[in-house]
Image (tube, rainbow over all chains, first blue to last red; front, side, top):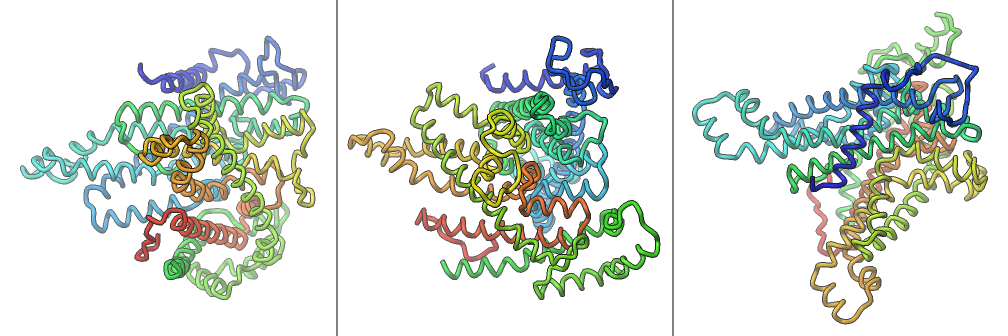
Length: 272
Length: 313
């Protein structure tokens, strides 16, 4: 492959997905069972990242944390993708008033400080996995809609679309059967690029205590609970922190690579 | 230019009204009861009824919205449900702290980011360049709160050089770690943009001419290429101000910094509606002001830029 940083990204993502999916097979420790006899042990052969204040193996919790973060990341991105794609298709295809209203809505969503909106929603509805899915998903639709709309604008003027419409195909058929398949590549690219951001959002909320609730293992909450032990057991915060960074890095590199490989002219989204 | 600025400032009014309206309805439509978070676990029904009536929480929503707007027009942001302190007083007390933090972070981002970017452009293709580009990519991928924890670990827990958290009556030592934390994503971003915009300019004829004249490479980059690369850099720094507001929430809660971000977070967690509305509105106004200043600066730096007096911008 001609894209070395993309390979690095794919490998990082692969490791995280692999260890998240196979966590129960890769470790014989339980992520949640408390074992005070072995609390706050330093890294050793049997506990490579040591144990936390409740005697739980940190590596095990990091692996189960991958499950949680990936679930929230993928589901919330899918929600963002479905809403964003639907509205982007409508805005781009129909234009005019529909376009203006949808795009103004996107502008307002993007203008709002994203994290504050997320914090407000999570504080109001109460932290749960479902709330995380929906909140992060709904906040993320606007970027997708913008991109899809821009793609639709170029596709809909192409001759084959004009031809299909001239033989009398209805709008829904044209949109779903003929335009959607032609904007699918950028949608896949933006899915990958957004996954890193979604995981970052999830871990920020969990860090603030608004995401994963104890005893569920999540990288953000593990970092937060490790702060009190920075002097005696720094691995509690350091291990999950390194893993979040590498995971987000992996998705960013992979997304960049997919973008470069699919269409060098495709712009970077303005929001990081 | 003055005409343009005035027009933009006038546009603040409808936009802020929009932000106020969205925040108001969002906070009132979502479930959760501010009275319950006020009284806590031990409460009796009578107290709650009395409080609800006092706070006009039982009035119909449109009526409460109108009351809120009429107070807003008189520049009255109301009093905190929790502390009873006027929201405006709290904002006045806390905003300078956040501004100080953001200004320090912005300075770091510009100085270090541009420094790294120019260095990478000068040594382009070298291992140093790859290291810096790689570092910038990692920097963008690192969560703000995690960098904060890492800095506390290294500089406070390990080396004992700097205080881990707090405000310390405003001494510089307390500012260093939070400012570094807040600046991280921006620094990485500015470095990337500086490098690529300087490299874009290097191919231009005027730079080739300057080089033919015998100017040394660093001088060439800084005196000529950088000057024309400033525009995208300014834009990035301006756009990033929004991320400072989000970042301030996390940074201020890690470092116990008594600023607006922490204030807003506490207000949201306690469903202190007046405090939430006031601080969100204030942040939106600050964000728009910075955007306006950036646009004006834009026209100063590049005379080719025409300010468009037509729209809201």
